[in-house]
Length: 119
Ligand code: AMP
Image (tube, rainbow, N blue to C red; front, side, top):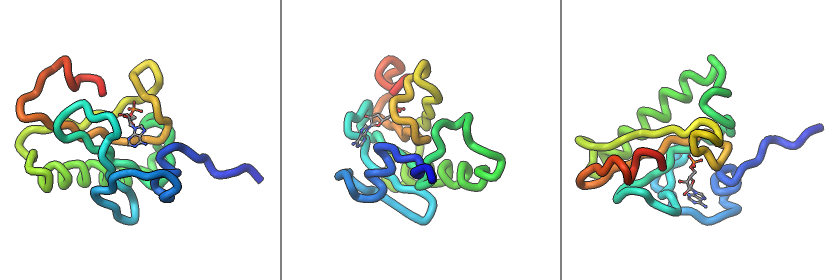
């Protein structure tokens, strides 16, 4: 039988690797990005290791909605609810380096397009 799909983020979720956990629930975890591109740079990561957004199934729509809600909630709790961005890189050519779907939540005091357009 094949092993379940394992990623760097799976290992973080399973506490095999260290990370700053900001939030977690039954569907996802939120950690600080290890190389922040903005004052606030969080990653919202589903426990389910969907590789890319394009690989999400129709049955994942509830999960996808939840991830967006969590991103907004984390922005609110971080005090940046009035100015933040949510970015998903889909595919290596779009800058995806970890093939486990994740949302970047980015916020700076003042947005600089060149700083945070492509995390
Ligand atoms: P992406 O390039 O969209 O796949 O985003 C992957 C993100 O994961 C990058 O912003 C990395 O800085 C971040 N990252 C990689 N390794 C870790 C880690 N061990 N802990 C937290 N964030 C990480």
